[in-house]
Length: 192
Figure 1: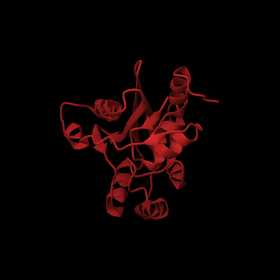
Figure 2: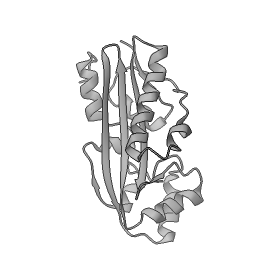
Figure 3: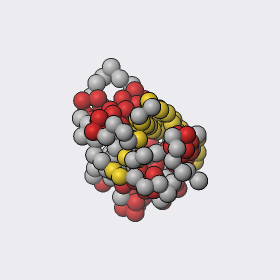
């Protein structure tokens, strides 16, 4: 059975590769902005809708494959913190998060010939209070410009936090491997 990751994210590719399964990647071509700008949707709904649309878009082209779609966003007080894109925006996002707890939503949808599997992992992260110069040093070191929330916990970003609560720590990087491995194993893939 063919396994396809409906993503161009290098972080998700690296995570899925940890399972030792052959897979290919395909850009899903989904208009994310149309969903993200819908004011009737909460952050969790946005991530779940996008994960499913990504998986279904690629599955429509490969109906016999197992397709993994995922989406992730950070939010604070209901305001979504996207990928900052610039050093200045990353520092500003981190300044908003400093000394506070926010939620990181990671939604995954696996579409396969027998149906659809879904999960949403909610991580609650508490950042230590940080002076502006510490945030600038961090951004210069990790360059988290393509990460929701502007941090990389798998790198130096872990030092920014005082607490992290989640079901699967790999979800923070973009794909909850514990759940994903379980689903893939049930579908017949040789996961350990």
